Length: 336
Ligand code: SF4
Image: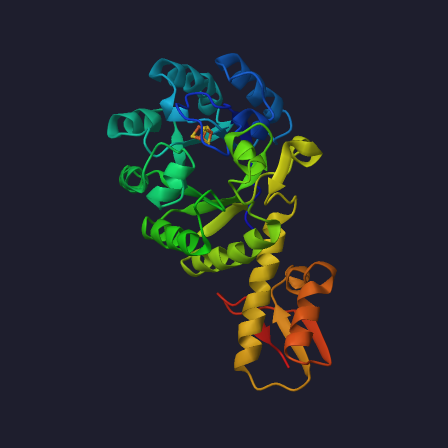
């Protein structure tokens, strides 16, 4: 088992961002009102380090906003605030998220000197029409250019994509995933669109000009994206917004918000794999599926949804799921 990673998140809501994307309300997503300052960075790190074993080093993550679009002097102040913790070894590296059109070579050189190792880019879509409708203010070509620079300079690259944006479709989302895969990210995050209160998207939805991306659509499409990324050997480090009291308490007024969205997506992925396997096999009316350790509930589905679906589709009298050690790259096999 790989050792637990410690990540200290520091949110920089909307700081440095020249845009107003239709879906965005960074303050509500990050749950912060005040912008980050060197003092708040130091405070967040000191508080978090108290709970992290002294012999372990953590990763500091600047999330939200667009870090590299902040004036250079402010970026430097925030990064300098982390340096004493890096020198003492308590912080091992820094990651940050930013916009694809806010990076160039000198900027990356500077970030490297401060110990930034991972850069997350909000690509969101590789379809220029979707990007325009979402008010992103950058193009797919910007994402391509920035991703190549990031890889060339030796950083870890994480790409974020969204599904269900205005003008988006399943076909365009699958195409986006394929294009992101060609950029060889180390990992991806997928965020199905959630309608947040008081955003332009909220107004479009209220006016009947945007049809919400439902949880069920996000799960069906998500399972297909999960498969594409998994088969390309790219890990999916997040599926769906982090659940929070604010979102669950009414800020998420529509769209694909579900506190366990990632689990629903993975469970649907297992259902699809099992469906394919069974349809290609010669089987009787009683089946046993084998899955890896810890994956029985994913295969079974919430309230046995997957079991019921497979039993009905394949006219089975019984279907059981067992934990077993599978060969590398296998998720589900038929045991009997
Ligand atoms: S670029 Fe990021 S921070 Fe800026 S408006 Fe869009 S989603 Fe929000």
